Image (cartoon, rainbow over all chains, first blue to last red; front, top):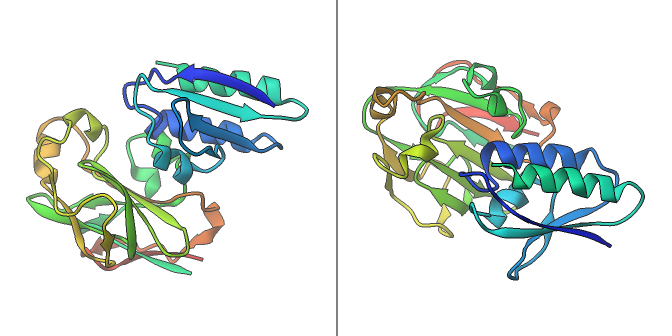
Amino acid sequence: MGERKVTVAAEVGLHARPAATFVQRAKQAPMDITVAKAHGGDAVNAKSILAIMGLDVRQGETVVISAEGEGSEEVLDELAEIAGKP
Amino acid sequence: MTTVLAPVEGAAVGLAAVPDPVFSAGMVGPGSAIDPLRGPGEAVAPIAGKIMKLHPHAYVIVGDDGRGVLVHLGIDTVQLKGEGFRLLATEGDRVRAGQAVVAWDPSAVEAGGRSPVCPVVALDALSEAVTGVAQGRVHAGDELFIWE
């Protein structure tokens, strides 16, 4: 299982544009991808905008993005970049 | 099937008319948008369900079937940090379709240099799942679109 730990840098948190961009990228990947807050809580489906909005990640909070399977390392790198973008 | 109601009174203009590409390109999801009537008003729940997220400028209602609808009151209104918005419900509340959720004034948003246009989005829906999209004048609580 691959993981990336990333601190969300956008002022709006993982909402609006960052959330939509993140979910769009995740949906292009064939494998299951999850996101959880680093300090506990349930992992949610990274391909669901509803789930990501429900996770309610604010600026400065750290999330763990997880996936496994062929190509997952590349997807995780791209998702971490989106989530970490100011 | 879910009937999604207009959360505010105004002109149904479609998502393409929203001056924010995240919404106009359908990145958040399919749906519609309303150019609201200017002046103080109340934004209502577009469907019955639980208020999953309640910000002054935006809210998400999730129905019993798990479908979530986002209402965003104006564009870039997160920057207002709640000023000019008054919550009429609490996150986690169960609401009826058409129940008031936030009081606001689109003309104040506009006076601040922002668009008061309200996207109403079917979250995680395929674009072809949204049909019967209303056009033109709608009252709060009128049918805005059908989520098949």
